[in-house]
Image 1: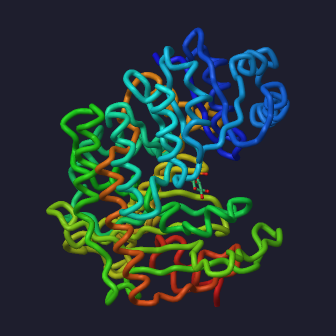
Image 2: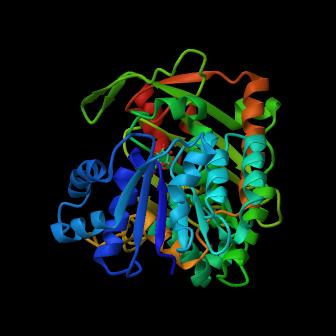
Image 3: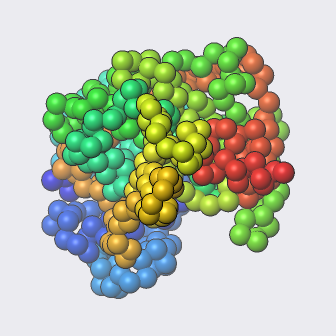
Length: 478
Ligand code: BG6
């Protein structure tokens, strides 16, 4: 197990809110190497004590139940160095004394700094084997910048020691999609174009852009969420069964899905996609301000795209991908709608009024699975059969201890398991499709539709949303 974490971006929001608390939990549970240590690095000119004073209350806030001895034990393992990531020597000097340990460098920094930082890491001797590298998403902002990052870094470190994160893959509910799909005959039997009418993948957030303006102004919902989390969910839903759970067998299947995505074209962009940006509104009775990116930025906070996977299994099945900020609630779900039965026998309801079978995988905030069937249980016991929708719900008991996604991802990287990390060809294929969407939007001059914070996106987005939200989306606007 690797025993040394070189954490860049240590004063940033991601590190303070998620990475250090994850490490604390792993330490508390005895899952880190005995002599595990962390070198925290950022631009600010703190010394180690000052950094501990910043981090201590953040850890207490993130994990109020953590024993103070554990927090102290974590802090004792952390030393801090101020580093200028644009300066190769500054990076090399900050890490070279650790080159004889087994290091994992974690870059929780903007992708524009990846290359200079990695050059410094290589110079400092911590990218050669057996050292490893963890890279946060996004890798670049389009195919060209991603390619440059991937190929430049490949001079210094082999792919089998690079761990590209998509924290959605670290979520238990997301991993459960693999378990459900490949552990159940029931699902396997219907999982194709013969039985499935459509798939919706929705990642809705009630939070806004807040505090990440500089990054977001260059990114927007398409590059921030669809390129990574949503396309990874799409891969898990749509991929062929891998030959085994070995990392590369899973990643081989995911990349095939990404390569089968039909590029969006300008002539169909207005029909197959929508982009929006929130204006002032309210969420749960609380006022929310409009998002105002800096002059010249045209980014969206809401994106809906109907994707088509051009392969045998999915030909003709639309995948509606939707994400947005400042929507009424935080919810991530995959909704699989099945085709109607081939011949309808019943008088009531009529065929057209019958609800289609639906499988809803609710991923967060709660995890549960719903299966929508039609049954006559609620109808009269004699006479004409009267069918009504019946929801079967499998809820995971609440109060279950869930690890932060990063805990799992840290452990896998320390242990060298790639299954939940994104391979270079996946990144390339994901950007290739995202570029087609961005290009189509540009060529078609797809307008940025405003929506008040607290609504399900622009009214025109209703058709992209799963059926249970469609009415709300339309109704809100009415
Ligand atoms: C990040 C995005 O990758 O994921 C953020 O950059 C987004 O914009 C976040 O808010 C959502 O993650 P989660 O785990 O809260 O759904």
